[in-house]
Structure formats: C-alpha cells, structure tokens
Image 1 (cartoon, rainbow, N blue to C red):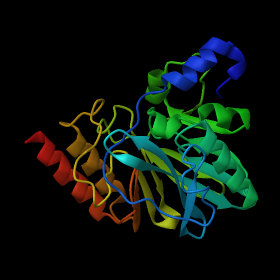
Image 2 (tube, rainbow, N blue to C red):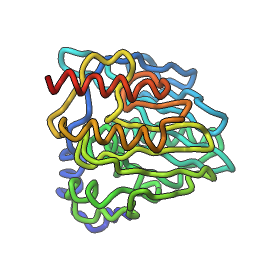
Image 3 (cartoon, rainbow, N blue to C red):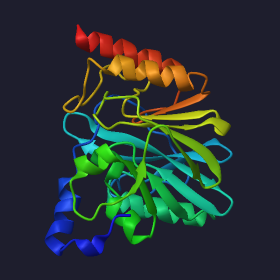
Image 4 (cartoon, rainbow, N blue to C red):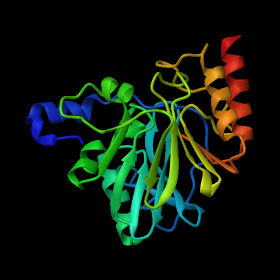
Length: 259
C-alpha cells in the first residue's frame, strides 16, 4: 500500500506534480451520463456509462493544446455493495468525484488496479490512498512512479484478482504504448480493458509515443489477441469502446507509424 505518512509535504506535492505525462491525443468521442458534472467543469467532471450489469466505464477529461477537450477512460466494477477501479480518473478532483459517484451507487471503492504509470491512469493516487483503497500495480509501474512510500500490492502477470466480486486477470503483454502497460480482462463480463495500448476506432494516430516501443507493440497486441481475442467489449484508454476489431485497428496504426 502507498503510505502517505512516509512523505513530507514537499515530497507529496512532487508526487502529484511529477506523475508521468498521459497517453493523450487520439481522437475519440466521450460517453455521456446523467451523473456528469456541469459541461464546463472539466476539473471535476466524471461521466459514467454502463457496459455490463456489473461494469461501467468512467470518463474524465483534460483540455490539451491543439486538441481541446480530451477524454480518458477507466472501469468501475460495482456489485455486492463494493466497488473497484481499473485506473483512477485523470486527476485528484475527478477521482474524488468518481469515489462519490461509486458510493452513491452503493459500491464504495475498495480496490484499484493501475494499468501503467502515466497520470491519466494514476493521477488520483493520493485521493485513492486517502480513501483507504488497496492499490495494485506491477513492479515496473511502481519503479517508474519513483515515489518513496508507494508500495502497492504487486501484480505478477498473468495475475488473477477478484474486483468487487468479479473475476479479473491482469496481463503484461510487453512494451507497447508504455514499457509497463498491462491489460485487464473480466472474462465473466466478456470485457477487456486495453488501456492506452489499444486505440479507439476513430483514432487516426497512436497519440503520445514518447514512452512507446513501436517495434514490440505488434507482439504485445498478438499476446493480447491470443488470450482475450474473444472479448465482446474492448475498452481503449481514450475514446469509445468497441469490439476485438480495435486490436486490428491499433495494429494498423502501429504499422503505419513504423513505415
């Protein structure tokens, strides 16, 4: 678990300011929800959309230069009076809002899995810790965050977890969008969370590739397809969910980038 008591005020401020840059840039249309904050209040806005009876996608936003409002997705698993997250919202304020929305639905968040170290995945870390949420991350993600006191429960791929009563599997397919990216399968829901290594159907580029490994990205996609290619719903890190065709679409974008 992340122990904020191990950090002084300056170190904690550095934690919040120093989280790695987000996946960013890859055009997508954000989902809407009656739980949304006011349209112009992006600092705290979180939208929820039901994917299956037990799983919702949560979407938060940033305004990016030359792009405008840009959405970022994670999952909220909500069942049996308990909630779990796959990735935080994009920042502390929207993560606090997300926890409120989950509690209002009768599923207070108890666990959260980080799919890599960029701040669109981990930007609500301090809020989750303050709420007593048990955090999970790979050793590589923990190392890349390089913040003393961040001691999540370790993920050793392929790792099986129970998230709010739902069976999950976390797979590290190898470097792609980031050196530490993992995907999360919820086989009982027919759902795969691909995170930022999977692009939405209307994405025209791979977006931010500052930490990417283009040469190993195809092999990572192959590993995901071999294990989870029958998933009915595939959720990318940014943009609208789709089906397994998102894996092929992402592979085509990688091939384009390589040539």
